Amino acid sequence: MTNKRILTGITTTGTPHLGNYVGAIRPAIEASRKGDAETFFFLADMHALIKCQEPEKVRQSSKEIAATWLALGLDTNTSTFYRQSDVPEITELCWVLNCMAAKGLMNRAHAYKAAVAQNLENGEDPDFAVTMGLYSYPVLMAADILMFNASHVPVGKDQIQHVEMARDIAGRFNHHFDSLFTLPEAVVEDSVAVLQGLDGRKMSKSYNNTIPLFLPEKQLKKHINKIKTNLLEPGEPKDPDDSTVFQIWKAFATPEQTEDMRKEFENGIAWGEAKKQLFELVNGEVSEARERYNALLEDVPAIEKVMKLGAEKARDYSAPLLAKVRKAVGIGGF
Image (cartoon, rainbow, N blue to C red; front, side, top):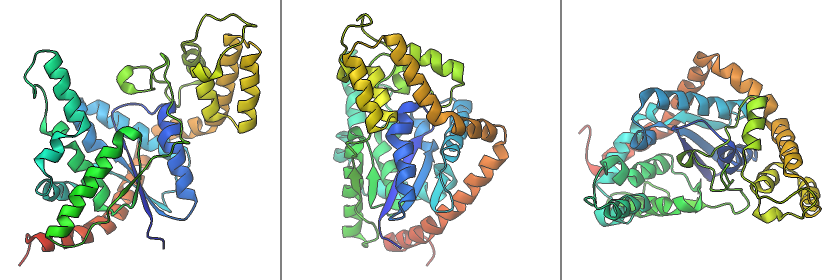
């Protein structure tokens, strides 16, 4: 078995959208099929508590995200697919790592600095409404990564810092106690698309501009028709590189289809026609998975069974490593 381990998690705070699919889920599932690495994929439901205090929303999102991965063909026999909260070793490791993490390092975390900057701009106390969950988020992420000694962690550019923090914390532990942790590497795939949303900004639940992945056909068509475009008329040449419609097209199309659409834009394709073709392309890729997804959501016990089996598989890795951690730091049995 290869020593390469890939780990990816998705926070359970919303319904999976096209951006999640092309940016994280699709490339992760493709990587799991190559057979050159062990792959670990998880529902980051404890991370969700940092920004969502609505229990039903977290629970529903967890079901939807699990069903999405399974509907899209994740092979849970060859990958380890689990719910973060089902692996208690992660939270215990998180505390041990908290005792290794420098406060100065946490002060430099992007999310914390952004919250402080926003508070100062609003004339508030710097730490107004900042919870310890938000502040120590990078330590929990480090525990996620180090618990399974992941060697490669696919992330967006905004998450590179967190992987570097995990390396720092792991290095300090290894130096002080025992060399138990692999130093992970952030993997940023420039070829993986970061989709724009309905308003032209990055597709994000935070901006409320997403296109949910498994919308029924009519609703999918309506959402695609809402994509913001300019006022150029049919027949007027359009810039494909400045178009959300083309950008999403490119993420789903073959190179040949992309080149054909680029020519259509140069020839002045009408926005209505471009959106119609985009709907047909996206719907064609997701329609079969949509049927499996809806069937899974009607059979929640089946999803739960998969998650429990995944937790058992994950704990085959996490329990022995945590035992070594406990021994190294001097806690537990004599």
